[in-house]
Image (cartoon, one colour):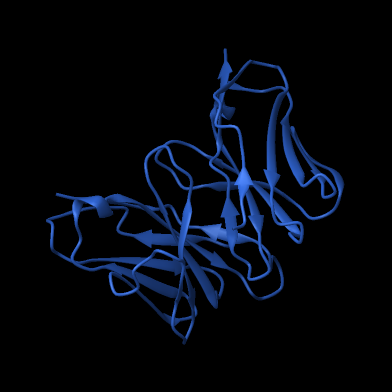
Length: 118
Length: 110
């Protein structure tokens, strides 16, 4: 149980285009999902916290108009990188927090999406 | 600024040895502590979590927590080449956000 999927796993796009990444909790409901970015040989940096039915909370330095987050259901959150540029190339990872009580403190991570902007 | 510090390594140990990974954190109010393993190009996978002072054992892994010293460690007994990876220490804050350290790269020599 507690599986999180991401789609796509890998995407290459041209500079200036927008890319949508989906994060799904497959067998549990997640009122809270988190989006992280990881550059090569660096650690995970939290970008934003996504709450179902409300606006996402962005970390300092993350542009909310560039990284659009939508959490429309208890099992799906999306991250859209708008007008992508080469410096946005990174590994984007989502995690979901189960709120049913079984593992309330644990975040389950998706497999990640490798974004390359040409 | 809440911080989690780890030695970047690499920590190199021979197969069968004990690998000791350390982590310190700045937020004295932190209550939940996690160790993740990350292979290159993959997302993190949870190894262990610990909430209480002392030791917690799970198979070959032992997590140790000392809240007074704001120190968390992970011991890997009988290290295997397949344990070679980057180990991330993470601390959860009061809003359930995980703050990650920069990770320690472990190399287990056959």
